[in-house]
Image (tube, rainbow over all chains, first blue to last red; front, side, top):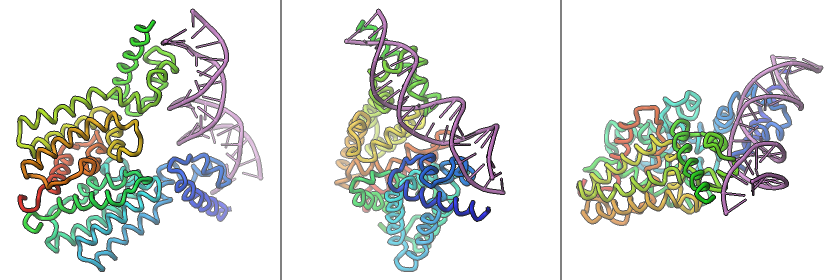
Length: 185
Length: 185
DNA sequence: ACCTGAACACCGTTCAAGT
DNA sequence: ACCTGAACACCGTTCAAGT
């Protein structure tokens, strides 16, 4: 019986991933129906729409957060920051709904506890990158990761159907110029 | 008869302004009901929800756009830009729904023509401010107003129930530092 | 324990019917 | 010309009933 429940849960996540990729506004009901489970079964596993979306993208968020460490090992810290920011916006453009979740998380984690699942790893990675840049003297000291995440909001809310990459790069460049110490620029 | 239609239109806008201030997600149906008109009457005047919201805030958007010119007459251009940005975020925090409209407009005006009503005056004011800063040599030449608007997205999506002013000021400071030419900083 | 789907209270939008 | 409100196809969520 319990294995049945677990299979349902996994089936829901599977369908949700595909459905959200196809349509950012895919409904809970339609996901349940396509997964072949009752609506209430979905609710048993995921009490709110946001919980489902966050769980669907949990692995992706973890991956991108973990990428920060790897990028720092490969490149100078400022380049690592730029590469990471571009990577994060890439995820937000591809995986529908993730952009909104990140944007919501950037709104200030005081807003809702639900955000924490997306917020914690992302702000952690961002803190890591900023700390490394600060230690290398390429970013002004005392920058709040929350402020930087808020400044990145635009990266999560671009039009996925446009050619967003050039604009993302320009926004990241603008951001980096703001972070760099006046003297070193 | 036609005067009756005009009165209905004004009554709808009146009620909508109040309803949106009280609840950002106030429904079209509830606004029509409270205005004492049929649902289809509201649709006759405003074909989509966005059209109604934009029309409600049209005056506000005009006002804030016009403020750019006045601020430029009063202050040095860079200070005028800062003051204007803060003023715009103040509007976005107060008038519910305006923040989303501005955020949508910043998404790139290619997305929807509907945005134009909010987009045109705002990007015009922003262009004016940037041009003045550029002429004074306090902002790098060739900055695209669209890029700056996108970088400002975070200002429109803060939590209105939090103490957002300090964070807005820090974001604006970060943005300005990115706009300033390296040598002058 | 876990699942089901009808049912509830909404939403935006349309349309036949009124004056 | 302009207005009306029932009706449609949805939405998220709940809950009594099943196994």
